[in-house]
Image 1 (tube, rainbow, N blue to C red):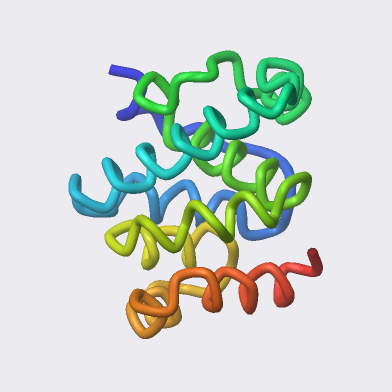
Image 2 (cartoon, one colour; image 1 turned 90 degrees about the vertical axis):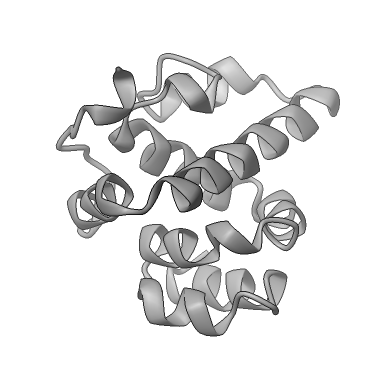
Length: 133
């Protein structure tokens, strides 16, 4: 399956570590992260955003998170955090099981994610700030 692939992705210094974090996350966290991305992509598509174009620029060949490799999940998360942080913040607050993994992908680490599960959007805002977004 596509999820078992560990790609060495490009983008920012910690992207390889983030890909490893996704690969090693428990299935519940992975599924929550995929659901979060799916909702964010659906929301953006409903607003007229060219989702395939956005993901294509990030090097991702599918718009379906359930079909993405670990590296594609990281690239998609980073692309959305960079281009539409307000949507990521809004959507992330509804997926507490994805918070630890989201923290790992955006550079906050699992501890920041675990502490921020209830805060959701506030935790993401802090991570986006640390990520320079």
